[in-house]
Image (cartoon, rainbow, N blue to C red; front, side, top):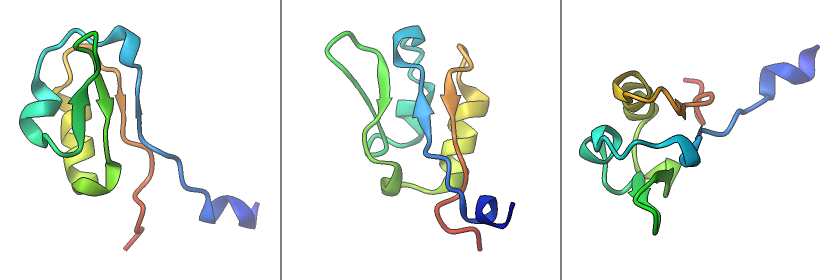
Amino acid sequence: EEEEEGLVLEPYIDTALCTTCDECININKKMFAYDENKQAYIKDARAGTFRELVLAAEKCTARIIHPGTPLNPK
């Protein structure tokens, strides 16, 4: 059980379900990008804050952004 405290869940997007709403891109173009099908993916999770990941997840109209856990719990 103690090992779980250090567990970091990486953020991810269910890219195949993206509706190209632009919400995440408008929050941080360095963190989020579109692939060749104009569907979002996380380009660089370290290019922004955990708060931005959570905000993008909340604003996502398709509800496909999963922010994971903070890289720095403090």
